[in-house]
Image (cartoon, rainbow, N blue to C red; front, side):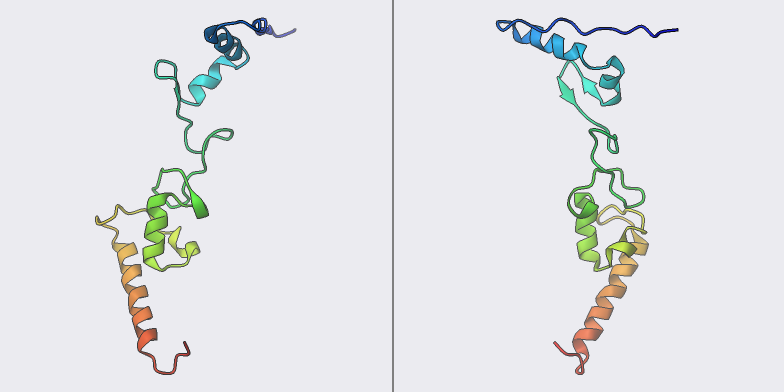
Amino acid sequence: MTAAVTLPAAPPTPGASEEERAAFLRSLIEPGFFAEVGWDAERRVLSAPVGHPLLGMRACPVPECDLPSKSRGLCRTCQDQHRKSGLPLEEFVKLPRTTPGVGGDELNAARATNRELVAQLNRDPTRQR
C-alpha cells in the first residue's frame, strides 16, 4: 500500500506576484505545521510556543514559570529575581517562581538569610578582603 503524496505547486515564474510566491512557499509546508506553531493567517504572525522543538525558545527552568528563557537559561523576571536573591543558580531553580512583590515566602526567606550572611561576613574583622 502506498501513501498519497501531494506535490507542491509549480515554482512561480520570475515575474510572479507576491501572493503567487507566498502560495508556492505555503504549498511546501505541511498544513498541520501552521497550527502547531501558532500561525495567525489574518495578522500574519507566527507565535511559536515555548518549548517547540524546532522554533520555540527553551522554557525557563524555574518551577511554575511559563516564560521563555533568555540569557543564562532564565527568563528576564527570574533572572532579575535570581540576581537579587544571591542564591546559587542550582538552588534558585529549585524554588517555585514568585511574582515580584507578592508572596514568595520561601524565596524571600532565602533572600533574607543570604542578606544576613553577607552582613555577618562584612562585620567579620578576620575576613580577608
